[in-house]
Length: 383
Image (tube, rainbow, N blue to C red; front, top):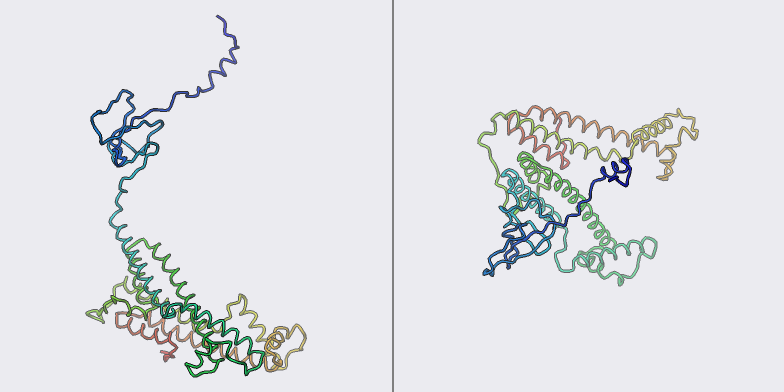
């Protein structure tokens, strides 16, 4: 019998895969009637469980079973008639990972305690204290705004909160308003500082992947971050007194201590030099050109053209000064800045030499005391 299609058509038809028209696989699933725990399953259509039991429930399921479910582990699965759920206990984490997680939780709790204690000093002590502070500040702002241009002998009936504060402290309304504003500024600075610390150490704690990292973070949280609060903890850290202060440091210990002390010194030097810079990019170049114009004016070597004195005139106009006074002020400010930079550089070199030469815990303790003194504003003799 001849085929009704050409050989070419037959070849194309043979190359097209046949669509699987077979029905979905049917499974018989046996579960506990009270817990939906899977106890058995089979695709045997002739399977017949014992009919005298009342603790199990038999269901049919069309489709593929979860790939991870086997007859060995099906007791760890639940089936509600339509959906399988894996309720097996997860694989236990390695001991080191569990230890790191425990230490991570402890460090986060320590950080939380420190931040909370730092903020508690600025928190209201009475119910609705935040509302009272808000009202006080609104009155202070309104008083300062109105008295800036209005009659100085203004009635005080419109400032009940401010009047109460002034009366209790024996100060004027203006002083009371300034006190409220000052407290608000202190609170905002504290919040900015503590939030910066909190964000930094939360990320550092979560990134720590070794015990050495955890120990370093714990030391920083106790000794570096808001150190004055450590003594207030319910369980303060015991003071550690080594047996021998003069015992030479190991190489590893010395490297870590030198790095820590150098970091502390750098922060102190940067804080002392912060007043010299205003934070604008390129400010050193602009300040140098302005200083050259000021010196040229004082020396009488300028032509006083617009280009020669543009920066100096801008500085003088902003401060409502004559050019001569502005130039003298700039020269004096530059001299003060140079003195600050030179003094901090001499201090830095002297302290770095001492840090690099540390040999034992006694040296570290002495340098630590001097660094704390420098941070508090003391002027140590250069050595």
